[in-house]
Amino acid sequence: MGRYAPVTEDELARARHDPAFRQRLLGQNMEALLAGIKRLRRAQAPTGEETKQIREGVELAVRLAELIQGQAGPGS
Image (cartoon, rainbow, N blue to C red):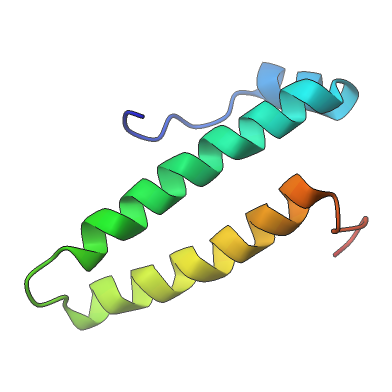
């Protein structure tokens, strides 16, 4: 997968009404997030900022996984 491409307003609108599209969109974003975390982890000596980004990325990945699995309810 290539670099992260921000989600457009049209994609967000479609995702609200098309569960299959929403799942694909979440999956694609999970792949991009995990690739970014992997790149940061491969750094010879991650800086404090890179370490913080890895931690934040992992927290976001957990949240995305919950959304993909349908466990996150409204307002979660």
